[in-house]
Amino acid sequence: MRKNLQAIYIGIILVLMLIPLFFFNTKDDISITENRTLAKKPEFNEKLFSSCDSYIQDRFGGRNKFVKLANFIDYQVLNKRLLNERAFKGKNNFFYLIEYGDGYNIMDFYKKNLMTEKELNEFEENIKNTIEWCKTQKINYLFVIAPNKHSVYPENYLSQRPEGVSRIDQLISIMDKLNAEYIYPKDLLIEKKTQTNIPLYYETDTHWNPLGAYYVFKEIQDELNKFFPDVSFPEIEYDTKVEYSYDKGDIIPMLGIDNAICTRPELNPKNSSFEDYYECIETKNRFKFIKNKKFKNLPKAIIFGDSFLFSIEPYLPTIFSETQLNWTHFCDDQKEYVLKTKPDVIIFEKVERVAPWCVDVKSAD
Image (cartoon, rainbow, N blue to C red):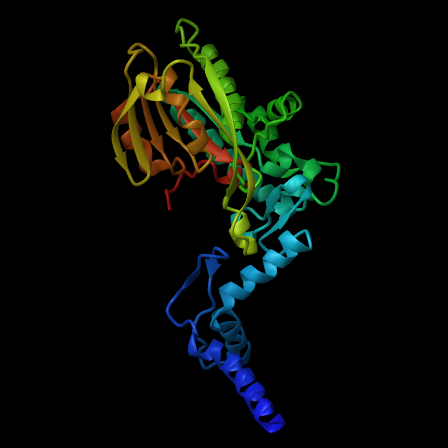
């Protein structure tokens, strides 16, 4: 009897050991759970053994379930702070981005990513050329730099941000030198966050939420008043509704977490909706054309930006007669399109972590 139990026990162990081989993942290229590229099939070269190790670790059967289980235990049971090379959980359930390939945020937080003199000169030349071109075409322009999440909420980081010059300080110095029209609403958002218990950025995401975006929108409108002093821009009152939900965001999948609690404010015009003010005429992959229904005599705008446009997008078409949104950066390739459209103002939006490339005079790629 005892020998039979031992045989059964050994059989179970062998089956468990073979399961990862039976369900070995050879098809997927992307890990949806961790939002990253999986190791590729090893090639026969000097890195064969190390690449085999990475390939097996990334693709053994049931790996995603084991990752989820481990993170569930750490996050929900042991309440540990999570950290890897891509992201981490900070204080007050705020999550922050680290990832090298997307601005290397942690280096920015510690002010270790200062630009070289050559890089600063290239940035200055690009901004200068863009400003001169806009002035030549008699088009107003505005640069909008969306603050990094850690610039507005440094207190939720796991350590204190050091004193001294940051990369954005370098860029703003150049903007000031060129007398560029820009807003960098870090101080505004820090002030506003002290006046409300509603976060202005999603806890589980890198982006500002609709409330944070609304405050920035109002600052953009203030700048437009300077450009167009004879224009009466509509002043719309908004109702704010706050919901709390378990949300993925763009950060926590990097930690292997399915979801975490997130504050989701929603703003809508009082006694109406955004659809009462404008309609979308055309939508393409990285482009949207919107016309105002109520106010036909407002300026026309072309906006170039990144994913931070999504939360601010609903407000912008209320203050323009026509709004063209382009989810790309401005470069020579778009000049013909701009001249054909003949906007009254161009807005160049870029998040702080990639602000050095807010315009590219060469190409969109």
